[in-house]
Each structure stands twice: as structure tokens, then as C-alpha cells.
Image (tube, rainbow, N blue to C red; front, top):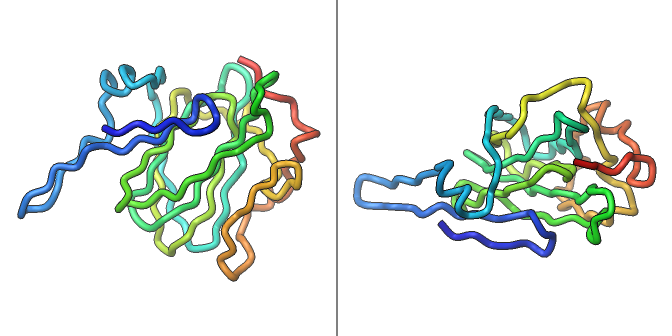
Length: 183
């Protein structure tokens, strides 16, 4: 497995090894012991999957307090442009983001630790997005950050169509209005 650090401490990009032969290929997408040895401390307890059309934008989301979640995300079909924003109180990279394109062909996995808002825009129709979480979802703890807040300076890909967001995602506050995440 190849592991890349990003410019924001804690965010990791992982590329699992692929073993191919004339029959096709095999790839180990998760192994708790190997991932812990690679610096991912999470014990994942919930798997989620979404299916979306091109232009859907989901995010930016996180869970507050004791319900915070670290995530390991990847794309099963289609493509997304995935982004994580540092919202950790006192972090030298607070408000900064890192983004990556995830596809089945590049096999990239994006590890997003607790203390980051997370979102993605779907680049292709029929996209299946999978993520492992290290804590169970709690509706009362869900939080959001406005995807187009100028303070974040996120340059979302221009798909030639307006992004499709849920009413809830359109109503999220700006960075200056949120309570930074604390462990």
C-alpha cells in the first residue's frame, strides 16, 4: 500500500496494492492491522454508501462532540472531487482544505480524521461512494459548513451545470459562524 501525506497534517491518501492476472484483479481495500501500522488509529464501526448523479454536491459535514467521526472514503464507480476542511480549534491549518479526485481506476482512499468537515461533488453519473466511519451516526450531533463560503477559498470543479445540493446543505453557516471542533 502506498501512503501519501497531504499538506494538512492528519489527512492521508492511500493506494492499496493491486494484484492482476488474466482473470482480472484483486485488491485488499482494508485491513485493520495494516492500516493501524500505517498511522490510521480508527476502529471503524459503520460503513456507508451513497449513489449520486453528476453535479450532486454533498457537504460540508461533520459530527460534533463525542459523536465525531473519522472517515476512510473511496469511490466504487464513477468519480468524485472530494474535499476535507480543517475545523480543529487552534490548528495552524484551521479553515484550510485539501481536495482529491477519487475514481475506481486510481484506487485512492482518503483518510479524514476527526476534526474535519467533509464533502464532495460528483463528477460522473451513477457514482457510488463508500466510506467507513469510526463512530456511529448521531442526528443530534450533525453539523455543516457552507460549501461556497469565500473564507474557505474552495475552487469546486466547474461542471457546466449548477451544483445540486440539499436544502439543509444550502443553509449551513460560514466558517466564522461555526464552533471549531474540539476533541
